[in-house]
Every structure is written in C-alpha cells, then in structure tokens.
Length: 425
Image (cartoon, helix red, strand yellow):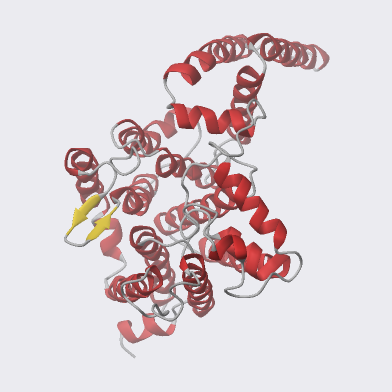
C-alpha cells in the first residue's frame, strides 16, 4: 500500500460525517431564511442565483480545496507556515486600501463576482505559524516571557483587523488561542486574570470606577491575609497587580467612550441593561428571541416560520441563522444542532490529544479553540447573552469566506492526524 493510499484510509471518518451533517443542515436553513412566499415557485434549493445555491457552490469549492489539502505532504504545512504568515500579513495590510466599505468594515476584497474576507483565512495561517514557533525543539511554556513571540504572532494581525479593517468580530476570535496556551502549560491564573479584567470592565461601564476599586481592595486584602496565614514572604507582584488593575479600571471608561464606535458602545450598553432599544440597536436580538421563543418544543415546521419567511430578523441567513432553527425546528431541533457541534468539538479534542508531534497538537488545539469560540459566541449572540459582534456559525451561516476558511482549518487537521498514523508504520 502506498503512503497516499494509507493517508486516505486513515482520514477520520467521524469528523467528515459531522462536517457533512452540519453543512447540510446549514444549507437547508439558509434556503429557509431566504425563503419568501412570493418567490417559492421561482427559486429552488439549487438555483445559483439564490443564496442557498451559492452556498452549494461554495460547498463544492471547499470540498475540492479540502481534497487538495489532504493530498499535500503534511510536512509542507510546517515548512510553509512562516511564508504563509508573511503573505497573509501583507494581504491584511493591503485589504483596507482596496476594500469597499461594507457596513463600516474594510475587510472584504472583491474578485470578479465574488467577495472574500482575508481575515477568515488568517485564523488558520496564524495557527500554523504559532504551532511552528511553539513546536521548536526544547521550547517550553514556563513563564510569560515564553508567550511574547506567540502573542505577537497573534496580536499584530489582530490589531490590523481591528484598527485598519474595522472588523472587531474576526479579531476577537483570535483570543480563542488562550485554550491552546492553557493546554500547553500556561498557568490557569492567566485565564483567571482575563476573567477578572472582563468583570472589572463590566463593573466600571455599568456602575463606576469606585465599586471596581472596592472589589480590587478586597481581593488585595484577601491575598495579604493568605500570605500571613501561610507565613510566606510578601510577594511584590501582588501590589503591582493591584496597581495595574486600578490603572486598567481608570482607562476603561475613557476607552469605552472614545475608542469604541457608537454602535459597538450601544450594543454593550444594551447587553448590560443600560439602554432599552427594541426598535433600534436591539432590534436584531429582540426579533431573534421572538423567533426562537415562538418555535416551542418542536417548531413550526420547515419553511413555515413566520418570523423567518417574513424576514423580521435582519441578516438571518448569516450571523442570526440559529434563530431559524429555533423557530422552525423548535427546542428539539436546536438541541440537535448544538449536539452536532458538541460532538464535533469533542472529536477535535480527541484528534488533538492523540497527536504525537508538538506542531500537530498545537495546531489541533488552536482549531478546537476557534470552533468553540465561534459556536459559543454566535449562539450567545443570537440568544441575547452576548453583544452582537458578527461571528458566523461554522459551516452553517451563509458565506463563502467563512465556509472555506473553516474547511481549510478542519482538513489540514485531518491531514496531520492521518499522517500521524502513517508515520508510525
């Protein structure tokens, strides 16, 4: 048996099956989200002039790309990682110059009749570059100094996407790499610190600086009390941490007022209950909740959702596609879709854990983090639990760039996993 035959034999079939099931469900719901009673006799599921037809086209393109990725030697991904990173870095810089303004964002490049969003492809390339750096011989994640280069590889493109392309959602996805860092040995205190900063931000924005300062004072005293109880030497970093947190709280309000855009600020205020705008900035979320709530246990039936068919929810075929599931498939259908995603993420974790090479394991956990972040944020956004930041649901939301980007992530991982078995022989 040749190596190529062996690779095909060892492709993880469960992951492929989950990919196909989720893509199929997404395609059906995209058709439903764009369906209207006026056009039901004109447009069909496979009509390339419709969004469902275009999604099938992107599915076909993605499958072809996936097959090509499986045919490439697995060593090429590590070898080309830095080159691809430099290439996407240049593309991200050029994008705001040539891009058309799409709802305030400069992140889309038009190629003929298609529009592509380079930030969707940057996720996988950044994951490859970080995996190559952290997969070096004798590299260990023992202190914050070991995080400087990986964080720079992630942070610089993130700043470009936020600052130049004005695309907050795609940039925030890159914070999902924290899961991979934690798996590679990063202290859990870093995750606690991130959670603390989020809590402090909410307190300062929702209330004021003083409640946040009181909370920090209590935590500081508890730290001193613990040191005294355990008869340890005073830790100088405790005071530095207090000062850093106080400075952070001091600039939160300023940054909130002068850095964020009006619509971003209003979405956070809406989430925190500071404003009530059911017909304004909160219209999407409000209509989404109505659609999901009206579905009940079993839904209204495919193509029978009134909120969906009458297009009460803007952008329902992209970021708010999950409310179509809630209205037409009900709680049971929504649970089934979330179950598919849960099984997919668990399967990706299994693939990540069985990798023997550090490069492959780091890339695999980066993929796990990206998929988990997208699913959690998108569903939380649709349910009104999180601000609306434009995060698509993997393989479900309409969009060629996101579908192709997720396919590239998934199939590179499948190739690395299959190569793991062939290398053992």
